[in-house]
Amino acid sequence: MTEQIELRTNHNVRVVTLDTSERVLTIFGEIRTEDEEQRVIGYRLLYPYALSLGEVNDDGTIPIRYERWCPYSPVEEHKIGGEHIISVVLPDNGILDNYVNRLKQVGLTEEQIFFEVNNGGESSPEDDATEEPVDTGEGGGD
Image (tube, rainbow, N blue to C red):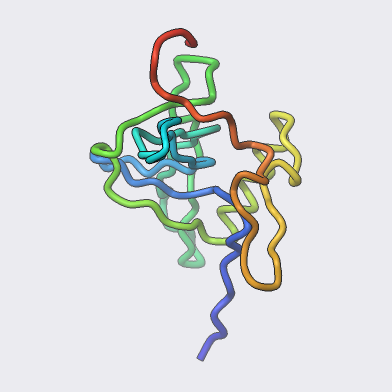
């Protein structure tokens, strides 16, 4: 029996499956209203990469291909509605390591990607340097 490797969870990196069947590796976050209810009104995908499987290698392993999710724009932040999301899961540690290396190439540091884990659990995502102010979805901006 092989030993199960524990997934790292001290980050907001997720594999998001969309209703188009695309799988996107991204720093994932919620967009909430600023009112007392703090309702989720959408989701933010930062530095998204489309994931796909390559051809099976001779040793039986299957490589994973990473491509920019939207190569048509230099913008690396995308906002989508929840109705387009099928599932959100933590990535395998190997996929996470590859993604972190790609993020380092665009100038992010590990301190911006990972947050500290307290003895009783994880710190809040608000401590994560990649978190941005609440977006109300109203006017202005890009």
